[in-house]
Image (cartoon, rainbow, N blue to C red; front, side):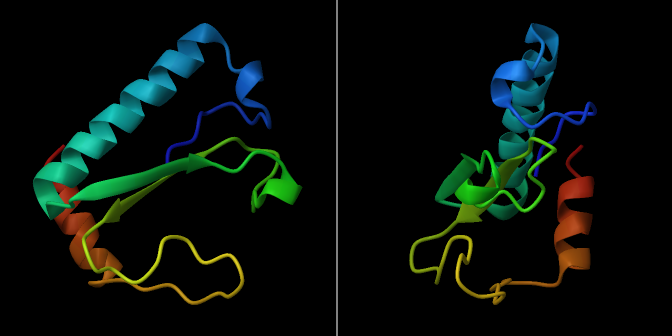
Length: 99
């Protein structure tokens, strides 16, 4: 997940410099994930507003989900079930080693 420091709800309210920084961090995150986890694709998305699924509606953020052929789902909408291929601590160590 990538989020600006300033708490805002709308993408269009980002200052130009904030938008550049947000997408620069997004690009770096994708690169690190590619190197560390070797996904074959990504889902990258913004849920803008509570009706669009924003769990934190007042703080803009971009979701990044690495994907592999045959994986089971993207981001569950109807249940709280999430599938993780490894423990979060192991993922953190892999990613931290790349930055």
